[in-house]
Length: 188
Ligand SMILES: Nc1nc2c(c(=O)[nH]1)N(C=O)[C@@H](CNc1ccc(C(=O)N[C@@H](CCC(=O)O)C(=O)O)cc1)CN2
Ligand SMILES: Nc1ncnc2c1ncn2[C@@H]1O[C@H](COP(=O)(O)OP(=O)(O)OP(=O)(O)O)[C@@H](O)[C@H]1O
Image (cartoon, rainbow, N blue to C red; front, side, top):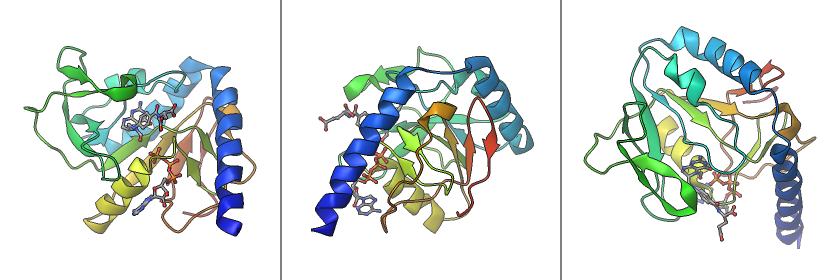
């Protein structure tokens, strides 16, 4: 069936992208590019992420953001992520499953204007592959229903895939920042 073919293809693409991600890239160039993209958003609420495994690290660029920061919290499988206020330090974080770090429950919930999105792979159309949980798709869909939000991927250039099969629930990226370029997707 078509659906099974697409699931297998996504699995294979995810494997490829994660392998490429392992090679890393120019962390300083990525920080510069992400800093440039964030500069016009002074004062905006920016959601970052605490990197796990070989994910590109947005934290040095986030340090330069002049405005509130927050981090995602997983409440339950198959539900949107929640965002809580982050002071930029490690002291206010708990550890979640898979080594993710998230703000302690007593910290205030925030609605981000800009979401820095982690990923396994991306393509030039603005499609993204995560770990398959659908968390960011559900989260961006919900945020976009309640107002404007800008989704910015943070990745190494090597994580680019020729074409990711898009599904109806996939939420497009508005911008893709890598160590090589700042990419405006051709769709999205
Ligand atoms: N740094 C970071 N934080 C994040 C995410 C992320 O992708 N990166 N998330 C993005 O959603 C949410 C956490 N969701 C996650 C979902 C799965 C896995 C994970 O490692 N999954 C295993 C497979 C698990 C299984 O099904 O057995 C894996 O890929 O090996 C990690 C985070 C929120 N925080
Ligand atoms: N808004 C939504 N409503 C219902 N199901 C959804 C929604 N968004 C995604 N899903 C489902 O979640 C599953 C995983 O989606 P997908 O493979 O695109 O995840 P991903 O983008 O790789 O993961 P993540 O966003 O967690 O990093 C799919 O079965 C998809 O149909």
